[in-house]
Image (cartoon, rainbow, N blue to C red; front, side, top):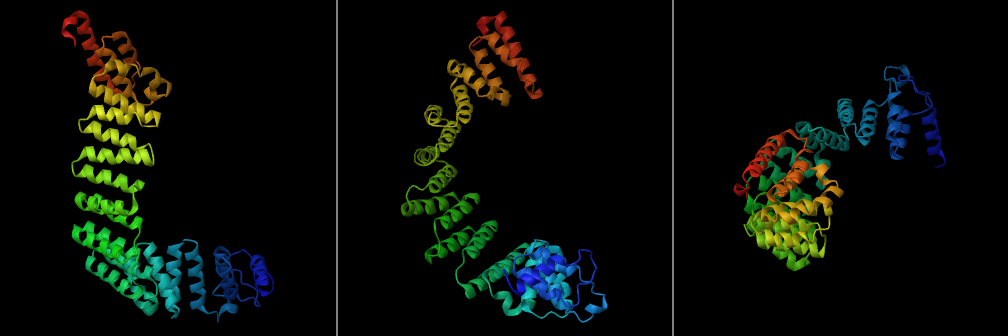
Length: 386
């Protein structure tokens, strides 16, 4: 940096720090603040402006509207939206007529969830309040938050009419339509955007995720199957298809998609496949799927539950050394209790007791007591035990 701008920056750094101290008469603090803002130093610009004593005689003719506008910009660029809103309001009160002041005022108010002020400022901004698609989204979101959905949708339509199809507009429409229970509208809006050639894989997955959240599993499945034809076995498509088929009460098909995602993309989905099969009464298939899980801790947790379901207590208790080595028994006392139960069912009471005595969670004490009582009965009358 050289020339007048470097001189102004040097003068800014040399200004007295005490608040209220007037700047030297030959330095225009507004011009200096403007340069600092332009150079990306809103904090320094703010200090220059705050050092101006508006009551001092030398600043009697200072342009108040510009002063408050620059102070608002300095605050806005630092994320001080409350201070910025107050400054932009003061600028308007001082006679600022630039539409951009109202646009900044609207944006600051929106950040503070002051939608009434934001909408009023956009109205006052006139054409400038419609110059960017983001301002229509701001306007629409404020109407939505004020529980005026018709006005919210109308604002999006107006924005689209002025700026053309926008991803943000479509996503807002889809989200709001699903919130209102208007599933057909959500699907129609999403497909209209896709048909215009503006959408991509992320847009398709966004729409599918919204349908899944709204429990519209059939519509989600149809969209995802179509997407799979276009995109192939993309990871997120396979996973969402798994959730869609699960919602449609087809666990085997769902598990198949999770298993495919595990094989092609990330082994972690093998655990999802196994869990779906386990929860839907397919423990043997679940055990096979569990064998593909790479995360050893997750694999052992799930395998223990599966072996417990299958009553394969020899295999279950054989996991004890690995569970201990990985620290799982110390991390999760439910696993320790399950291991104790396995030893109990095998008649290995001393080993069961060795696990029970290590329990510390109060809610497990009652269950441990019941198991100890059962072991005592078994010792007295072995023929009564399984």
